[in-house]
Length: 287
Image (tube, rainbow, N blue to C red; front, side, top):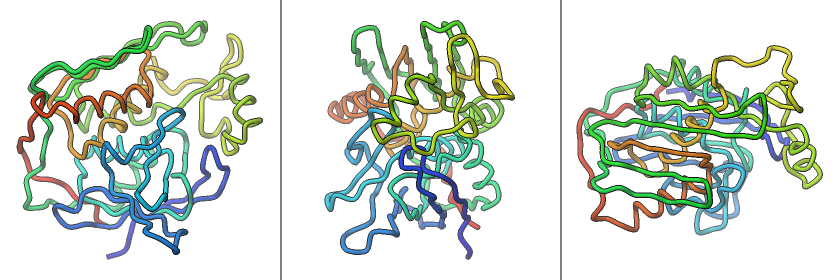
């Protein structure tokens, strides 16, 4: 069975990266493989503990010191489309940024197709509120009988201002309202990142860039409240390192990758606050 393949530029390294998705058996989980690393263990199974850095993106690693960055957009697509068993091969230090959203990964998965598996799909049901705060930033998981998400962003920018989204995290909503929302940044921050050796692959083709009260992208925004929608997309991907979709309501205010990972770790550190339940068959990527 042929893998589903795409290629693009790593947003921070600027390197051309090739990615392939291969089917996996029930119980395999989501595993990334750095095919460019041959001198040590190059497999990185996804888990909350595998996240090593979450300042600018979600970076995972293994005990051999092999790392992989910027997994969150693909992970969000996996979560929304119900994919829990897949082998992801990549020949560089980060996933390709594509157009800065999860849409190209959704399209790749659609091309690959899905196969029903006999094993039931696990869910993580949150039983007690889990909250983390840093100053005016907050991320929380609250008990809920389905997966809901609320996200609020607030920037001192006339282009963004204060925006909120509140939705049920399911496949159709993700496809219609979330997947196409792109990552964003401010022009002065992009220049600072480049001087620090980061954002080498960033461009108007893979991010919304703001300068003053202007969006530099010729086409402008793709949708209303695109900034809040993208932050919610990031959160879906950040939380899916738990290895299963949630039965919970996530509430985020000015949260980002770092606070989301602290929320994941706090949840895992309090096993009495959640339980694993099964509800429906899993899906697997197949080509």
